[in-house]
View 1 (tube, rainbow, N blue to C red):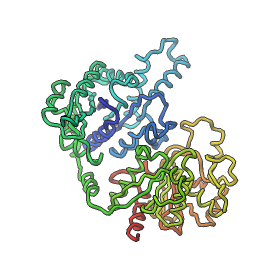
View 2: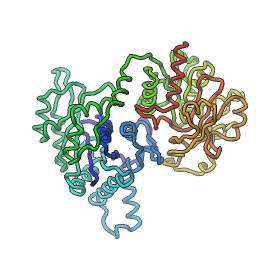
View 3: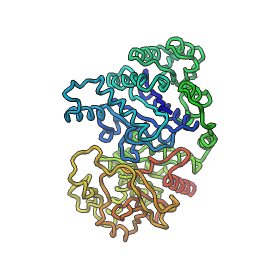
Length: 537
């Protein structure tokens, strides 16, 4: 079959839920037996989000092939349970970089380089790469931002051209908008949606479906109004009220026959009957009354929870599997540096230090790690969280507060965390870390091996600094156990303590491989330890 394309645009305001809508619809189509992939078109000029502050764009999500991508790729993978690749995240920066490189090389034979056709052709080429590299039969494409943004115009023009290039019967356009609620009158308003659709149609794209997002139920007369003024069938006006969990959205869409509607428009027949039983069982477990456990997430970007999106979701997944309600207590690591007491940690049942970069807040994280070790509170460290666990323990056994990572102090007397030799001459920041899927062999009889139930795993990485092998023997002799190593034994992947109920750190990011119905083993083991600690407490 020819590749089918579903394009999602946003209107009225950003962060309206296009990513979740794309992910949920992808799940509907996968349940019908089709191979699905999802692509994000991001209008910013950065080559990728790898060098962007989490305050600007939330977390950086890393794929198997090492691509640093938008956090929406995390939604896609968690919903459709398919490993995506680097062509699934395209930015304006990537597009212009490619076109300018070709121009400098003379590929255009002296022609004048223009947005149309050169930029739009490059965008369409990258859209076409998704099916070629993933084998997807249906490709969903989400355009970041909002219709009307100047940055997204080349992407929208490319999507308009796709209608002719791929064939109208192979393209389906969805516009996701917001219905604002006027508190004084208690009304939902459709006028912003009408203006947004008019803007989209002025570009040459007429949506086949409008998803009307709202915090309140959408009355039938509002659906009639949107259908009339926006020139879509009423059945293609999909009201989507804010849910208590994003994992409810696929079931909601299934119940109102969105999957069947899209399949009909694209001329497809379902290859199998959707089986939502496992998904519904997961939702049932999620909603059951359960014992609450509290996790202190000690980070430097906690003001923006999206900076730790995958960690938050992985904790929730593990809570569903273990049968507890996980409540996250967001603790700013810098605040722990401003006080002599750590009473903010006294009420929690577990402590987690996630990844991060830069010196700010590191001493606060180290204080939290020391508190977890000395008070035997379950602890999970991710990437930097493992490195600082090593720093904290080395300071204790060497009795020297100068112990540090060379990321924060290049002149430290004891660089227990240091650059890999092949990283030392690198000056560029973007895409130069150890990125993507790497193998890890587990040591028998360790906490990590017991959690995984196997002796070999592959996990996604995003870091530049490693545990300094010059200190491995010293740390091991003092009680730190290296339970996960690279196959050549050169790199430490997991560190833990054998004399602690659960204190484990990973050099990799296990949160990127957690799924709502298949929680990551290390997060499950952590939450089980947290549950045991809470019961004893």
